[in-house]
Amino acid sequence: MVPLEQIIMWIRDQGARVTPARRALIEVLAKHDTPLTVPELLTALHRRKLEVSKTTIYRELQFLLKHNLTHVIQFADRQKRYELIYKGSQHHHHVVCKKCGRVEEIGLVAVEKLLAPLEKRLALKVGFSKVGHTLEFFGLCNLCTKK
Image (cartoon, rainbow, N blue to C red):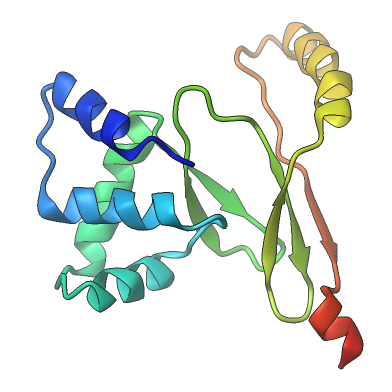
């Protein structure tokens, strides 16, 4: 569970405002276990009776990205999805249904242990810093397999 109030306090500590739109966006991202697209975020905020524009959502997402509170994930469909991250959160991956698009979060500790030294070697080899990775799996979920 994302420590929502800790995130809100951190934003205030940085001297930034916590507007109703910003707070609602963080709440929506915190509530969902899977990354969301901008249209999905817009729908979720409108369900909360918060009239925000797509521009406002993009502006708020840029704020969250700049402060390392969210990151962008792109699956095979190339749609950008946003997921809340926070200090102490675990790096994780996703498995995506190729038919319905359902996304499940998965943790792969063994894979992370293998990739960490590879990232360090790669960083040294190409002269990059803070090298990371994304790793997503694709398949058919149980519901789509039965269809």
